[in-house]
Image 1 (cartoon, rainbow, N blue to C red):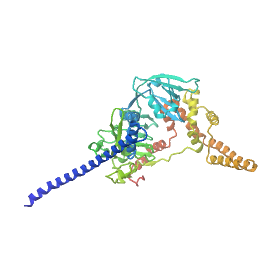
Image 2: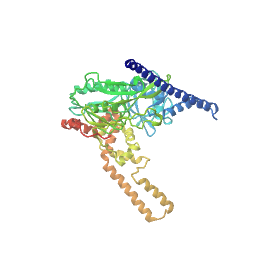
Image 3: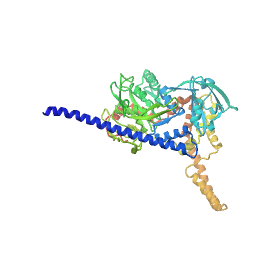
Image 4: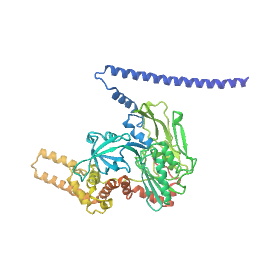
Length: 550
């Protein structure tokens, strides 16, 4: 009699579990319905009785943004203009005139016109200051508003009025917008006879194809080492990160997995084919605090699978996956739908992304993990490099020149005096010209303590403006600061000249020219070259040792 009883108990247990689950779900959705009714009641009451008549569209947008602000920073409500960056990643192109824009000191200027774009064909140049867009004054708009007005559908017209230094009158350009394809690989080339370098600035739809071409070109030039630079790369499409890893990692290795509440959110991605990069090609990945999301997926997978070394500074720490849901033609909501985990199992999102009082199913993540080769690494908050490079900060005088925009302004105003960048490099008087330019500026350079000295001078003048001894003492201190500024100008002259050359390189040769100039004195690149070209050092870095601090 026991066997039939045993067979009866199992179905009853299953039925009980299903019934319990159904009751739990029913209770959950009932609470959602009650919350929605409460929200609608408050919303309707405000619109019908508030002292002033409210704009429904503006108020609704603010209300929705109020809801999303209680979640993680990446769950957002977007209207048409705000969807541009997302669409740029998904489509890899946009409607516009093909210019990279910069915004400093409330001035919008052309960083570089893109090859083949309407702006370049019409004669717009690096350094041109955009005064008006279709008769709208740029200074009366935010950067995003002005940039949005320049963009538009292919075949439509836009007028740009620019100021060009060396020209007396503004120049009018009537342009017809076209489809502009974004360029994700900023620069690739050989840094030494055996070491290739690739700088990727985003993971859009175009990134895998551009990386494939860059890898192949460098391999054709007999590259035995690769430096992949993800510094200040904010990420992009997960699919692009997976496709790029597929070119690097041995077949059938786990690359990244995502876990969420829906079936579609739970996936594991594997390398599907023989990698483009041979296993004997050594790899160094550069990251910094601006490396996020897809950058961290690729860097973290390479580290977890011991395929290469990671250098630089600890990355940003974004381990959340977003899905965009369209509401209508002009509006959508981007929702965080999953967490991503790199091969060791690490979840690298910073833990404070949401107030836990809103969460029912709190999860605890492990903190200690192991790479494929046995190295121990810690999770929780970004990718920590195998070798940390300490950033060299600007010195006091140089940093003030930078904050005041002197370097860029000087290069912008004097660019037309040179025929090529080599002329700038060979100009022995460039520092004297820059010093004269600085003296013409209105903003006073404030070395540490000089601001406080000015306050003391004003207070003492209020108390007694006739005391000769005090005035002489203050003059001595003032003279001290004058000498200090001159001393700093001498001691920082090499740094100042390097930054000036960077600005000229960017204006004359575009972002690629600026990057090539920057690489000449890049401490992270120098460190990567040293490790890659020394087999013992490289191999030792990949051996199991102590925990990497996070």
